[in-house]
Amino acid sequence: MRHMVATSRSVFDREFAEVRDNLLHLGSLVDAAIDRSIACLLERDMALARQIIDDDAAINDLRFKIEEQCLVMIATQQPMAGDLRAIVAAMNVVNDLERMADHATGIAKTVLRMGGEPLLKPLVDIPRMGETVREMLKQSLDAFLARDVEAARGIAARDDEIDHLYKAVFDELLQFMIKDPTTVTRATYLLWTAHNLERMGDRVTNIAERVIFMTTGDMKELNV
Image 1 (cartoon, rainbow, N blue to C red):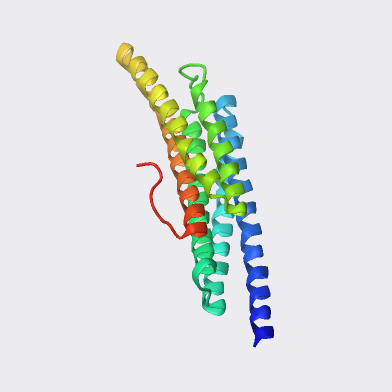
Image 2: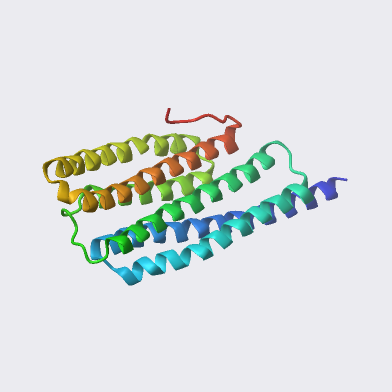
C-alpha cells in the first residue's frame, strides 16, 4: 500500500510539473505579446500588430492544452485538498493569462485602426503601464512557483499603480477632447489602449488571488 501511495504521488508530481512548465511557457508568450503590443503602438508598426494578432491562436491553443491536462489529472489522480486547489488554481491562472493576451491583441487591433494617423501626444504613462504590468506578471508567476502568499499580496497592491496611471491618462486625454473636439478619435484610440492595460492589471491581481487560494485555501478579492 505504501508503494502504491508513493507511486501515485510521483505520478501526480510529474504531471503537475508538466502543467507548471506549460503554464510558465504560456506566461512567457503573454509577456512577449504585451511587450510587442506597446512596441507596435510606439513605432506604428502595422506588420508587428498583425503578427501579435496571428500569434494569439497559439496562446489560445496552449491554454486549452493546459486545461485539458488539468482535467485529466482531476479525473485520473482524484486529488484531494491542496493538490486539488493547485490544479484548480492553475486552470484559473491560464484563463487569466489568455485573457491578458486578448488585451494585448486588442491594443494591436487599435494600432491597425489608427493606420497612419499621428499619435495625439508623446506617450509616457501608457508605456509605464505596460512595464508595470509586465513586472507584476513576472512576480505573480514567481509567486505561483514559490507559493508565496506575501509576494502575492504585494503584487495585488501594485494594481493601484496601474489604476493611478490609467486615471492620469484618462484625465489628460479628456482635456484634449474638451479643448479640441477634432482630437476625439485619436484620443479614443489611446484610451482603448490604456483600458486594455488597466484590465491586464486586474488579471494579474486575479492570479495573485489564486496563489493565495492554492496555498492557504482562502479565496477572497484582494482589491475591493
